[in-house]
Image: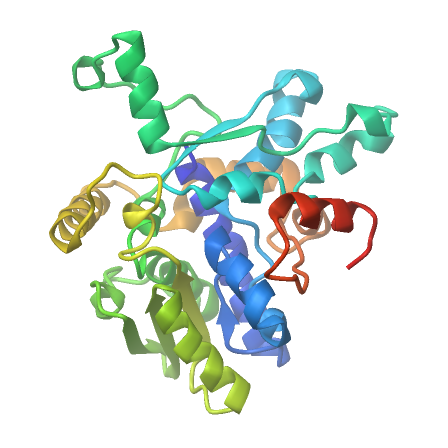
Length: 336
């Protein structure tokens, strides 16, 4: 489950946004959690890559943390840890095998004197929700009759902000909940940024950070992301922060989700997500006690040296005509 890592992503991404605002960094900053979107911008808009947040997705952050922080905390050899993520997204399989997604291996390479042939990725397997459902069915497990349990700790606690990642506009709203308090130093009384919710193609909002107003936008599907990218390319974009999700409705409409999926089903899925958020005790990512613990014990601070090594990444211009296998071969040989 990646809700814990979604909270971790928001703390890093929210602080990255504020850092760019305060230091004159590249704006608008664009979210980078959707691997289909990342592949799209690398293929077709490589000139805009500097606008992407350098934060890894929750899936990749979880893998990196599981094989470093968790491995150290439990005394388990990271080579013996297998990370399996359950995703609504088919593109997560591709993301897990991107050559640069091996931060944990690089972290341990010197410490354990690892050989290159012992190489491992942060995430070993990524299964879709539909594949998992099929496995349950084949095993005779009735998912609806399983008893309710809490996720294991650490890496299990999550907030309402993490839950809404699954809906278009959710990453934006979650980031704003944290960015507001980090920027103003004040408590956000109403955490609901309803102006960025809904299934419209492009949603925009003016967000008041205690007197500083920033304009944000949410692109639902790549068609609408293309419109916002053209604005950036033309120098006419008025936004400070942009969220992009590849799939209609966000991850809840992902290619690995139960089928059929239509607008009515996506609306019901979104409603259930916001219902869960409303009923969470903690609704801001930075207030997750396990997130506070991982910074105190391991990362020390957002955007720090260790965070940069394990939680952030880079992007490269790609050839849209190459297959993922061909890409990996070229990247391995530094041929791009």
